[in-house]
Length: 419
Image 1 (cartoon, rainbow, N blue to C red):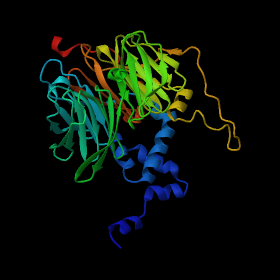
Image 2: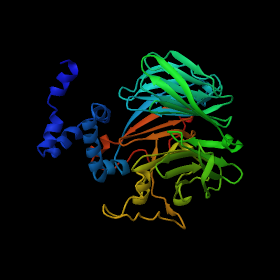
Image 3: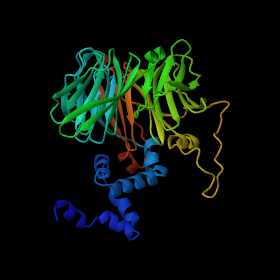
Image 4: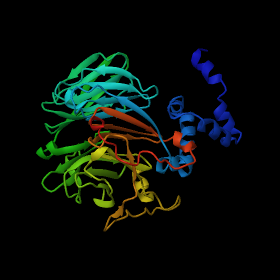
């Protein structure tokens, strides 16, 4: 029969409880787990992944949503090695197990365990600076100013391969299933098929030579379909279809340089030196919302299905809830049928003027003298990193157990060098 058959024959107590209508018991069981344990539960099987999705969606309306908006998160601190007084985490990749931080001009890459908050690996990285990192199951991919993509063993940190298919700085590397997508300031986007087994293999499937405008690109979609480029003279963002090399839309509204962009579904989030975060529907080029409140420049933005996080000058982190229509754009369901028996699609909503919001939650822990240069958000946690080589993991799943609003992290933190 074999071990897999034995495994299938075992009783899955959580699924069995649900089959008897005892979802509330499963909710209580999973609700008592820590966020690291809950992340591991998601990896066991598809059934358990759906159970975790159900409980987090259910608690989003109540305790989990309250935790993000008012609760006190637990905080994990990972201090990377700092070669000099300023050592910015310029690239970061996060998965269920680890956080990989690329240390700017220092060039090294440190990989940390999300559960133990201990350093797992130190990679030599790129001598002239790290621009992008992607975590795979077996390998770690990094890109930098030395114009190459480096491949590292996730098991022991050994360098496996050096990919030299670009001729200038490689500013983005994305892993999408078994495909590696890389973008360079030589205005090319390359698609490579990689083997994620025990043996390394790589084959270039396709390469797109773009126009000169791509030298000012800010963001490459994870699957390599869309590219966001900035016109630095007028601060306009253009959304390109990579393979056809055509402009899909142009986004006008920022009044100063844009530093960070993120795409989720039909929604684009951008933040810049004008101290605002803007939300766009890239299909219509409409600006939906302007999020105000940052004291200084916005350096990083990230978005999930429920909220946006932004990092800025003076060590400032802000959280914003997505509005209902913005969530629809994230889920790419704004063009759903009116009902199951109708052939009429909903019209795409248009916006003449963006709504303005100033009610974002502010979080201070990074010192006032530094920028929050890298940021990542998921359902349970927020990960932020600054110019002092510090990486923070904010755990909002634990905050759901609190009954009093958080009183911490509300005032800016002085630089420790001046204390």
